[in-house]
Structure formats: structure tokens, C-alpha cells
Amino acid sequence: MTRVDVARQMRRTCSILAGLLMLAQVPAHATTQIGSVTVIGASIYMGNVGGGATGAYIDITPAQPAGVEGCSGYAGGATLWIDFSAQTAPDGKTLYATVMAAFLAGRSVSFGVSGCGYNGQMPQIYRVDIS
Image 1 (cartoon, rainbow, N blue to C red):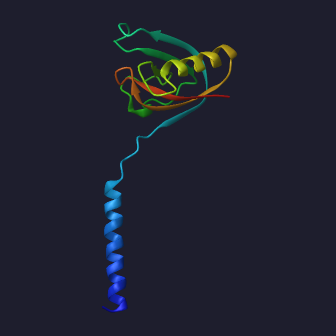
Image 2 (spheres, rainbow, N blue to C red):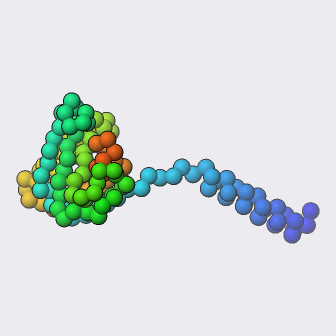
């Protein structure tokens, strides 16, 4: 085999490997960052009330653009959801306590939301930043 043949074979092998790698990658779920808003209210629900979901609505201002995370009931853009049934740390109750502390202190809050909670209607909070 000549050097040219070896080089072609290596390029072909690298191309095949690169293609297989792209096929094997798991797509990451997009997240949305909601920055520097004020919490103006909250509603908290037991599991057997509010459509069977356990968690809290968080009302914010200013409202965000409609369609954040593609949630079906998010037309107004001023409400987010914290899921209390989540088992990962920090759990929903810890996130809620953090939001309430910021609310009581009059601090601005930023959120990371991912996916839709409350039966697919509201962007679901997974991160809280107090500024």
C-alpha cells in the first residue's frame, strides 16, 4: 500500500467514525434562563387539589415571552411551576423556600426552567438565583 492509499484509508475511517459519533450523541434538552425578575405572588397546592399536581405556581414580573419551553398553558408568560414531587436535590420544597426568602427580602430572582410542569402547562423551575 502506498502512502496515498494509507492516507485515503485513514480519512475514510475518520469520516465513518465521526458519522457514527454524531449518530450516537444523545440530544440535550434545552433550558431557558429567565433573568432578573420580581416574584409578585405564589400559590401552593396539595396533591389532591389543583389538578392533582403537588407544587407551587410562582408569579413573576415582568412577564416573559409566550411559549417558553413550549408549554401549553403558558400564554401570559408571568407564571412558572415548582414541582414538589421531584426527588432530586435540591427538591421542589427547597426551591420554593429559596423563592419565598427572596420574595420576603424584596430581592430580584433569576430562574432556570426546563420542560413543562403542572400537566404540561407551565415552565418548570429547576434553578433559582437570588441577586
